[in-house]
Amino acid sequence: MVIAALGVLPEYQNSGIGKSLITKVEAEAEKILKKRLLVSTSNDDLPALAFYQSLDFKIYEVKPNVIAEKHGKIMSGVGGLPIRDEIRLRKVLE
Ligand SMILES: CC(C)(COP(=O)(O)OP(=O)(O)OC[C@H]1O[C@@H](n2cnc3c(N)ncnc32)[C@H](O)[C@@H]1OP(=O)(O)O)[C@@H](O)C(=O)NCCC(=O)NCCS
Image (cartoon, rainbow, N blue to C red; front, side, top):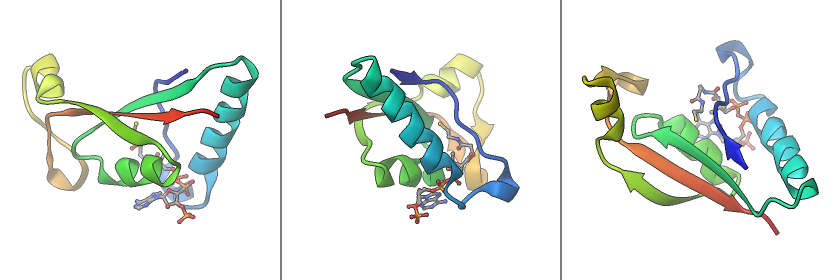
């Protein structure tokens, strides 16, 4: 199952909502016998990388520069870091 987009409004972040949403998605995925949860994020998004890894997602692929190429320019991301690379993570379901 692919998680296409996940966002919690800034004023509600760090209060367990993201974790709770992923737990629910995981339960739904298991119900329909999916074997993996997949998600991708960008190189700048260190909070999201920490978030997913804290929930047992592991990086399995890095696609250097694909986001920069897709947009034809380098945008500024979290903390002013350049957004370049796609980082793919997955969680294997039991
Ligand atoms: C990433 C995001 C979805 C996390 O949602 P959240 O509701 O803030 O996260 P939670 O409160 O459920 O955090 C769960 C765990 O993730 C980790 N975590 C979350 N944010 C973190 C951060 N900024 N730095 C380090 N760890 C973090 C913590 O370990 C936390 O566990 P704890 O509360 O027991 O310490 C949210 O910050 C967000 O919407 N960010 C902007 C959009 C985005 O980047 N989306 C993902 C792109 S794919």
